[in-house]
Length: 109
Image (cartoon, rainbow, N blue to C red; front, side, top):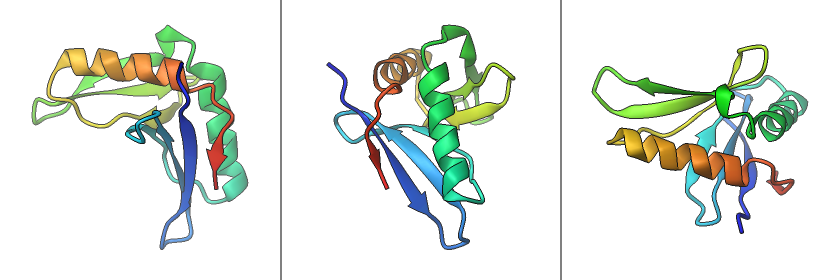
């Protein structure tokens, strides 16, 4: 059973980001920067409510040939981006991990 967690971090610029981590502590989704901790927590709520929508995942290929995905909210705004993967199959596994771990309520702040 999945038991991921969200980790909130405050950057040197004073802005907040979160990472969704799988059970093995590998980051599987990273957020944009938010001006406030409250905004960052709203981003987590958005991932929790959208991670089960398979249509919200968009597979992409970077200029260097590596693969990644983004998770979009129902309003089509990007709420998270994956790491880079060497293959398209890696992207599929990453998406499965976000689906499995994204609903977690565990937040390390």
